[in-house]
Length: 353
Image 1 (cartoon, rainbow, N blue to C red):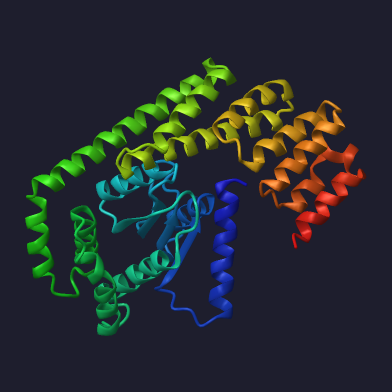
Image 2 (tube, rainbow, N blue to C red; image 1 turned 180 degrees about the vertical axis):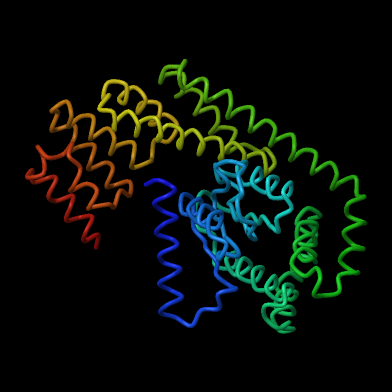
């Protein structure tokens, strides 16, 4: 769907919601995960009624803001869109929009409940700062109590992040002299400076790897990718610092996403020979991904290789493919829809127990 289509639907939902429900029109927020986060941002850009966005694992597709809104970004430390979220935060800083970016230990996935609670807390505290709702000391104290454990951490980086978070959340509505004083001490710490320098070096390396690998998709064969992916996995499981191992995990996730995009586009164009070649790269960088074998099945079905198509679908389902509607409606599988294996797989997806 086009951005225009999704934002039109979003505006219709807001209008319907305001008609049906006793909504505070000053506190309309949008949120979503991955592509859903992009839709939420696009809606806020084009509809000034949306006051804030909670964007999980995806940010600005490009630097364009028509309406200002608050933005709470969330991403896993192993998320392939990690760099994108950092770039989004930088874009919001440059145009002076109120924003915050919070990371959790995870991949490209919905954040845990405690992280989502922080997001809702942030937009609620901002409503207090803007005098939209009364100041609520209980909400403020509950947040302070939640963060107090991190403020006592012996890990200097964890403590530094928590201090910055507390100050950002409670600025303008709560006394932060103690936190500011401790933060100033930490900022002067050689150990913290070294940690931040190391993290920045890793981020620069990650960006360089992404750019180099993008070129390699057009130049390197599947055998090369097999060796390269193995090398990345060794780094991922080595004794390197956690933030560097997470970077290699993100790079593998990035390669998986790019591979998926290439194969998907080639399949749409019915260029099955090129799709098969690219899917071998996809299999090399993400061998346990169910989409790899779903694509393999589609390519085989297009070549009238029923046995391989069914075997690949079976592998895809065993790895977690669970979209029965997509499978049943896929035109590539019309010639095998009445096969016993196909019907069994449909039934298995619909009735996993």
